[in-house]
Amino acid sequence: MNILMIEDNESVCEMMQMFFLNEGWEVSFKYDGQTGIDAFLEDPQKWNMIILDLNLPEVDGMVVARKIREVSSTVPLIMLTARDSESDQVIGLEIGADDYVTKPFSPLTLTARMKALHRRSDLASVSSETTTQDSDTEFDVQTSRFQMNTKTREAYLNGKEISDLTPKEFDLLYTLANKPRQVFSREKLLELVWDYQYFGDERTVDAHIKKLRQKIEKIGPQVIQTVWGVGYKFDDSGVE
Image 1 (spheres, rainbow, N blue to C red):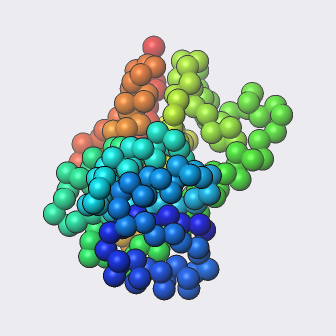
Image 2 (image 1 turned 90 degrees about the horizontal axis):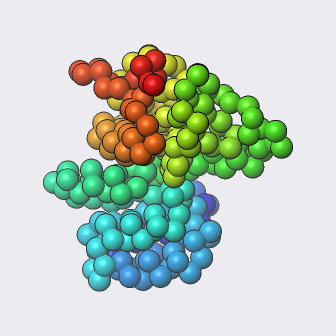
């Protein structure tokens, strides 16, 4: 991987550099928000992963995240946040971060999250690259109202495309829609979509569900239902 880490604490960067090198990953460190933005914009296609601290000098991490997402909705983005900043964590996820890790953190935890996110992103890229000429007419999930194609990474409700889905939002929607009316707990979704079996935060799921619902509601009725006290399910049986 080629990693851009935007973090103003040089001790944290030095610590993570050893772990990144041990994995065979290349990394570029930027110590304030503006130079982080500049580095990303110089060559957005260069980066396989962004690690972004929210508390940055010059330009706040939230602003950096927005700038990155304006250019790329697909580059994997992990935020670093303080333990007491729950609202920042939720807002960051809603802006478009794929995940977050709270400070102080274990380098092993961060690298595990990065591997899981990169693995999912890699699978999505391979799926997109192997799209065949007639694949746009083949759907992996199809009802009379809803269709999904995992090769083209497209989803449609009542014939209208649900646009601008991030890789995680698409994977989350596919996981739910592939088992219509089956209820998934947040823990199970963390395991299936994020590859987190033993660590993770349910707010990650809730924030992505919220963004996914907003994009669905732009074109039609809601098909992701909350089952209170349990989790979420996909149900388009009542969609007109």
